[in-house]
Length: 255
Image (cartoon, rainbow, N blue to C red; front, side, top):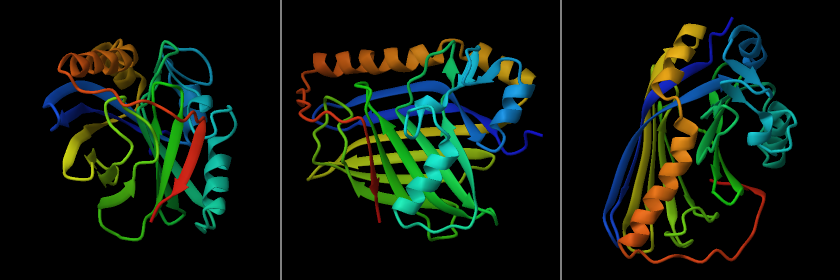
């Protein structure tokens, strides 16, 4: 049975405050995939496949070590390397699926639970359009449904935002709704707010088909929108920030 995985239909919003004001909002859908259920999803969902081409698909190579190996093993190894102790875990991943073989995930989130279904760790997996990735790992110590995490920016993302910045993550634990908010600050004040919100929808063949038909080119729209909004920022006169370091995949343990 597919009980723990689901679809979230909602919106992504970006609001920039300086040096020029800029705003955009797009309708999107994400999938929250329980990695223990993904083989069952592959078998029972006609338009969804695991590591194979389909209308919608999920490929291991898009996340974690990005070599196609087991994501569950990568999460376990990453937790051990960062001295986060566990006896057993359940892993859920919030991400966009591939649509007709293509996806770009600016942000994916691993929610890691112990066997008592208590959230113990969150991994924010950030990608840029240069094919690079950085994962920020936070241990979860509170019982609140609202999680707050803060760290220094360690990864070049936008060509219009310099590296000397701070992230403030605020997210809700996945339930009937989901909310992810990122406030980004430079040395002086708030620079940017980015958010994603969604309402839960059960994963069935019917719901997946209806969702796909509502967002038939979403993956292509995401990358097109990134470049379109970048052009508008450039046209407004926002300065470009030079990229100096080339990385493939890094991980940092945060407080």
